[in-house]
Image 1: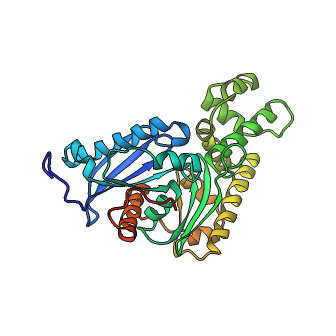
Image 2: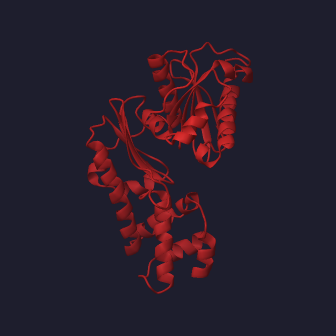
Image 3: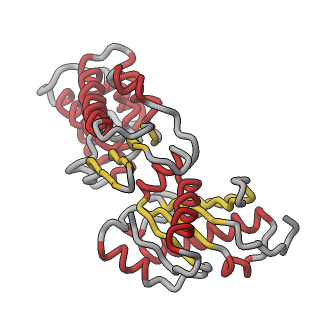
Length: 308
């Protein structure tokens, strides 16, 4: 499209609002990507106004890349997937937002991730990033496993692996646990020399910080460290069990998504490895599919959809 071109009504914006960034994609009716944009955090749980700004800014970036004037935002339908909108307060707040778009169809981040992974069809996803969660969408029915947050949940996640590594390193440094290569790996990564410095470094840190330490487990495990191997098996066994429960629902496809997937894959059960299918599209593309499905089901006059 040339600059300041007008959308013909068939264009859809898909937006994935995450805890660290908000990603938008503008797609045509025949699934051609016309523009993309990335802005700041888009999770309303961690800041509602920031999330609204990130949603709007990422959308404007996508329009700019497509050569469409910013004023045309008011003529474009948007599918949005956000973490936290399964909670009534956040759902109600987003529902009442005086947004700048023609209409918004709102979904959970898990649903758009699944729709993206399976190109709009039924399926299941195992999320292994900073957090962990299992989700399936089969015959218009959603199932969620885990996703209870860190540190009380999210077993098998990056944050969980990082925290378990810190625990074992501190035990080892205090002479209360077995000797482990995790000590050397973590001391090098965090540039600390003893338990006091390590404690000071990690105290009060969020899940995202501990997730950055997950690689310590896999580095040490690959080197044959007994403690690291035990942690890797424990986390992978949980993810495999979660997947097994989801597969009992008989989703047509199941995919592993999230930044930890590549490191975790070798430790998963053989049954899960054989069952996994590569994600077909990204969550923001899944948000486009969600919007289209709602337009078809509810009609173009609906202003805001129900969360599924």
